[in-house]
Length: 293
Image 1: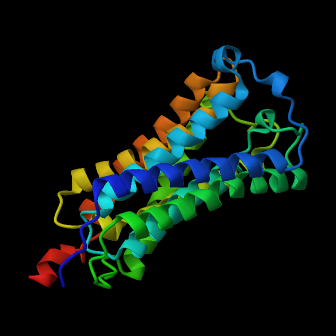
Image 2: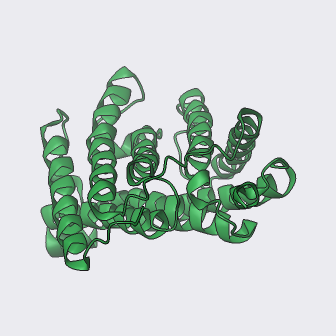
């Protein structure tokens, strides 16, 4: 069946409106979440020049714009249905925000110590970003991606391969973060809250591994291993994770370099690990192209 052609004008209008609505939704929910946040503590040059509201709006627009751009650009080249594409990308971005918000950086929260209050507050903050991101990807994919009228959701990775992916990414992420924590290269609460810090590191590593397996079928379409990892890990997950972390740098003076450093190291480690995984641990993956042909 011939694919339905969607006009560029319609795509631009729908994407623009969807990003605006998603940003507004995130900002409103953040505003109503109870917490003793003092805007006067935000002392970055961006806040002083433009004010916190403009900085916050610009941040969400940029973050969600990236979600839509990568979802549409890479999604158009996938044989999956538009809803499958939207849901997979949306799930990955939502997971980044939901679990990323739980990173044990107490100084960036209204609390003085890690505990149930911190976890609960960060959960609601994370869900405030996660739900709009998921809805954004699903809605824009449904209305702006051509439905290829196929249910080609063939699982390229079997259960054993998925387990290997998650385990290896978790291990390398944990090792890299541990070195960063112990050397002081990555700022953390390791001295005051070591168990929560390492627990979060493990959980987030598992989440990154799962994100790789979720997006892998969309990108695994005859590309070489380097390009696949670059597009999936660096361009999609990586840039979004960097943008997400940059919010702290946008509102607090002197924090941007640390945010860029930690997120940059995270993505570099996952990228290198993904190359190793594809070369040595995904032996049964002969690419769907070979099967289809």
